[in-house]
Length: 269
Length: 255
Image (tube, rainbow over all chains, first blue to last red; front, side, top):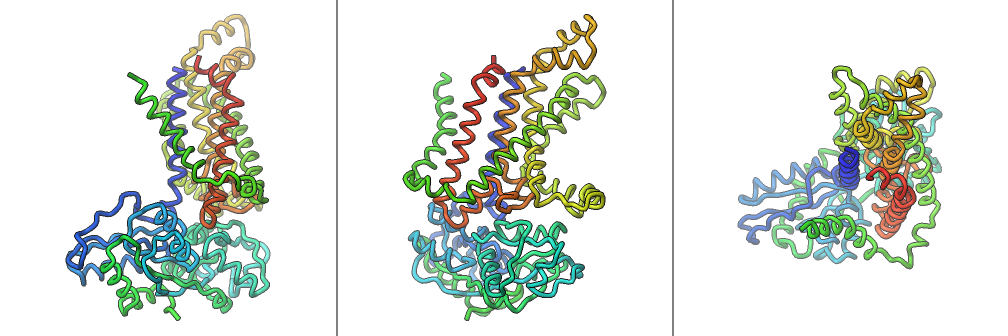
């Protein structure tokens, strides 16, 4: 009896440890990435295009993928959405993909240093910070400096992730040093803390606040222009070069611009 | 016959750790670990895991005794409910805690009204999350031991005139010690490794809620080498805990 109980506990301990180490990918992204996508025969006749894209591109790229499939008969587009740095780690550790779209230049550079990028990366969109608050803005937050009002519970991204480094940049520019209640590891976690009501305000990207319209209100502030984030896209070495190139052109083209503008992305300078 | 699967099982546990060690730059290890943030994270992890284990003992021992000895209807259902945190993904546990104790949760609102404090984003929230996920380990170990031992000794003590509290103190508890030891080690280890419930419920802020596993995750975003170094630190701490506590209590429990 004792042995059995201990064995059960030991197995469960292992299971618990497994699931906690699994969480990063499930939290930051949606779709699974463990299985390499089946490759098509190549060329433009058909096949599967695998796109690794930053979590903030989830809404716009999902829509773009559908349009791309409609225009290229026989082609299936599969997405893996996660934090850019997670995606770079997966790519440099051998994950199979055709296209990588990053939420910042630093992670694209890391991927290039890791030798997985084919050719040059092109910036296709820009993003900037906005303040997410509860619907109706009950605390009356109107500016970046308002975030330092006493008794306010503010949540930001950790400086290690792109949205956090953008926050730090704005703090330096404005001389307003925030005292966040928590520094989250990705922007969607910040949004969730505002949506659950546990944070009065959170610094997120304009696009995240736009996508969550109705659940949160967006407060724009002029200083956000000091920290514009560039989104580069590139083909992956060893992928289907031609199809990847077509998808890049598609994202950079009119269809791409329209879908990206819908959720609040700026166009590339 | 058992050697092959047993070797495979051992390899499954050991090889990933070897993989981590091979990938890490051992010469840079001290400089990667000796940063203020990692010491803050280590200290916070040890303190919160110790507090969570204490809470597990204070709450879990009585619960295990009740579950093992009680004869009322529905005790089997209760037993399954207690094991819920074992099967729930920790992130679900974290969400559940957030929706109970968060500022908009019904208990959280009550706490805020009564004390003016809120629970999320505090070290208390970390301890609560760790206790939530770790307590079943203690309860399972103890309950199994209690049911295995039966209540013969307690009945004898009672017939000899011992009061219930004396029976619990002088007979039940000493019988439980080996199982309690292994339960404490398992709970502490689980609390130390807690990630999902903590990041969801307590958030992540250095020296307040960012425990070692959360620090590993945050560092992995920028510097995978330092994340690997911190992982090794976490493994060393876990192995130390097991090595120190195991000889007496664990093997005693398996006797």
